[in-house]
Image (cartoon, one colour):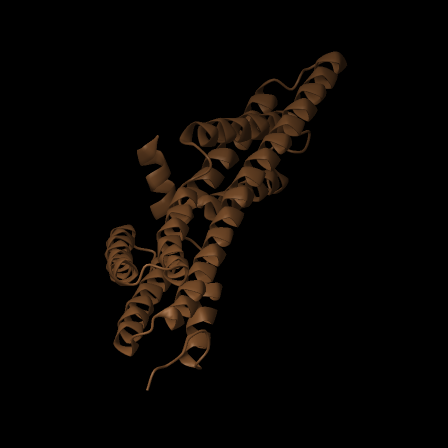
Amino acid sequence: MDSFIDFIDMYSWAMLLSIFVILGASAFLGKHLWVRHKKRDTVLSEELGIILGATLSLFGLLMGFILSIAIDGYNNRISAEEYEAIAIGNAFQRTTLLANASQQTQAQKLLHDYLDLRIQFFDTADEEQRDAIRLESIRTQTHMWKLISRIAKEHPNSVMTSALNAANDLYTAQQKTMASWRHQIPGTAWIILILFGICSNFLIGYNMRGKSDSNVLLLVVPIVTSLALFMISEIDIPGKGMIHVTPHNLEAVRVTIDHGGLMFRPD
């Protein structure tokens, strides 16, 4: 199943074409069988119509359910990016609590580096590069924690507790992102969805009553179904494809900082 999902991640356009070919072939096969068995009574045709209607209804409900799962995962990733931006912004503000100017500068430098790494994490589509960026951001957050915890030990008070909480929130926010950075739709659900599509298009072709050389309408449902499955896969892929989370909130924090907001710049 993992290899199947990886294939969808890397070759989404190939998946789109493959599904279209499979569904189109199913529809043509159904019509070919109808042509070979043209003599069907009215009762059988009505029964086939009922089966087709029920199958299409179930297929539509299944696609809607799978789409809602994918959208929930996408919304979770958006919320996680927003939470990271808030945590980083709060951490920048807490650096003003440090009494020593050199300590402020050091903390702000670490946060600048951390912010750049988190933006790169959301921007890159390469999985290995994203893993390396994540590990580097964890190391940077660890350096930030060590710096603040050392200062807190030297000056234990409620003010430094606030700074410690802000440094800890960086890691918490990143873990929330990683918890949502996964496929919401398992491989088994994809296989069932494709099988439903094959069955539905076969029945559509088998119920067609047009001429054997009139096949344009047969391609309508395979095209629409393939596009719908492609959209679902694009939404479900974390960090890849045409539909992905862009770090608008993190970039807004960087713009705010570059313009002198959120923190005090020591002379």
